[in-house]
Amino acid sequence: MFYSLLTTNGCLFLGFSTAPVLQQSMNMYYFVSELKTFAEAQLYCRATYTDLATFENTDDLDTLQTDQVTYTGAWIGLMETGNFYWHWALADRRFYKDGEIKYRNWAAFEPDDGLNQDCVIMTYKGQFQNTNCLDPFNFICYDVNSPEQRYTYISFLYTWRGAQRHCRLYYTDLVSVRNLDENNQIMDLIPTLGFAYIGLFKDDFAWSDSSMSSFRNWDLLQPDFLGECVALTDNKFWKTELCGKLKPFFCYRSECLSFTNTMCALLTLIIISSSSIMYSVLNVILNVKCLDLSDAYDQ
Image (cartoon, rainbow, N blue to C red; front, top):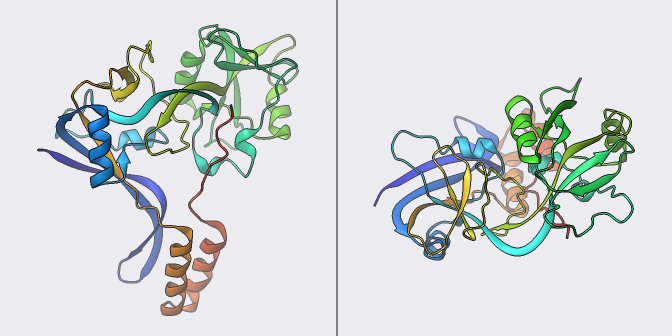
């Protein structure tokens, strides 16, 4: 059996070199070449590691790049549940303050229950309307690396998925709207009588470990709903597959310490460290903890 160990940024982790230091921890991804059904892979990962792999961004997926083995078709921890929820495409938990991930500015009688109306546009009045994801609209991208121009209105007509790919390629992602102030800033970019896609979408997929991550990376024409479980394609995009198929799979092990344990460890560092280190450690105590987005789902 072949195993491959890969890492990605996670929650808080304490490490030591010549002196105590603080750094972000790492979730560790393990590739298992043994062929199993989704359910068998899930049991194996839970018994041996933490669970089937969960991803929060493209950086996580980039850690899966290696020349050692082909990962095409490997199970990941995403599966269809039949329970639909609204999510923001930008899944980074640190991006949202308390309550911001649930901000909505629906127009009257929205969202409606129209068939396949699982994506959202903002009107020139700043209100949200759900629409078919295949309808072509202009869209607004968000760029985390450009504080001077965080929002960019794109006048091309794309489907929601096409708009998202464009935003991820040239910016960060489709825009999230976290509060009324941002709602007004984004609204001002939309021409009179116009509409634009934003990053809000609805689906019925959930992670095996109950993670609230809204990150999705579907391949073209996916999900096609020919199966209820999700596997990688050869370009790190995702596709649905029948859960009974035999496939290799990715597990992960969570290295995220509980905040209580982190506090104890940090206090220990304060005791054994110099006063110059103490202030940095205290600052971390006040500002860093593993986040729980238990309110991230919105039916």
